[in-house]
Length: 100
Image (cartoon, rainbow, N blue to C red; front, side, top):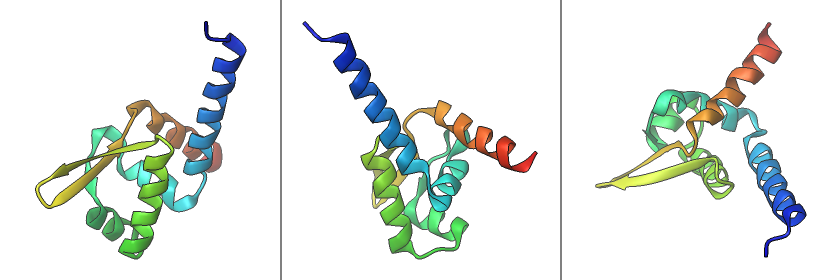
């Protein structure tokens, strides 16, 4: 039988790790570009952000590792997208909190 307190602790840890992964200016920008179900390659993202491709790959790896993003390989390209579209609401909330 699963202990409810243990399950809650695991979910809280997962949520905290997702928020930690998002908590970087470039990663927030990545999420913004992936809103609305968009799927982009590393090259497309690095061009949009104006940062090195290796830096972009590093940020994408962190977001994927922590369950924020998924990827799908199609031919020579790997496309990245939000694992849960509802995560874009975090970006919207941050925008409202800092820009209004």
